[in-house]
Length: 182
Image 1: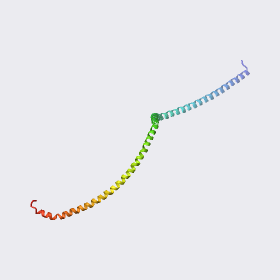
Image 2: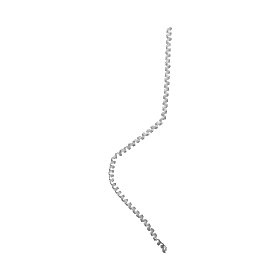
Image 3: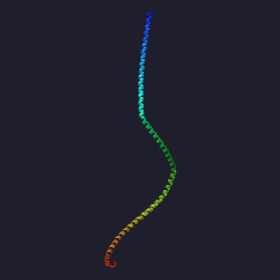
Image 4: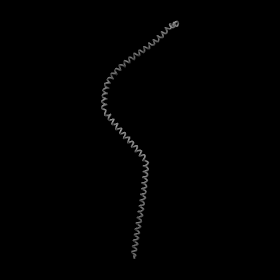
């Protein structure tokens, strides 16, 4: 059998074991409480992340048609720019061909310049001749004016003569009334 000292030591050992178990139990409860708090924090964080992603998906789904329209418009504009670049490339090629013909054009302009210089002398001579013609036409116009005045005077005189003849022939007309052959 056990003696008292052994009983006491056994009680103390049991008490210590109970104390250790109680501390283990308290530690286990704190650990469970921490894990539960951690689970709650993770659940809240997960809920916030899911809600944020849901809002993001909703916003993106609303913005997506506008973005696709903008991308389509941008693609159309890029296609137009590419077509315009090809057109500009052809135009630059044509301009280069036209610029390459400048020496020929300059030579033709030089020939025209020399031709115009010769024409300038001829035009100067024509100008002098035209000035002479203008003087002759002026003199002719003055003569025609004098002739017109002479015709006006003659017309007045002819009219007067017509009246005089009419007046002088009035006795003959009276005699004609008595003409039996009429």
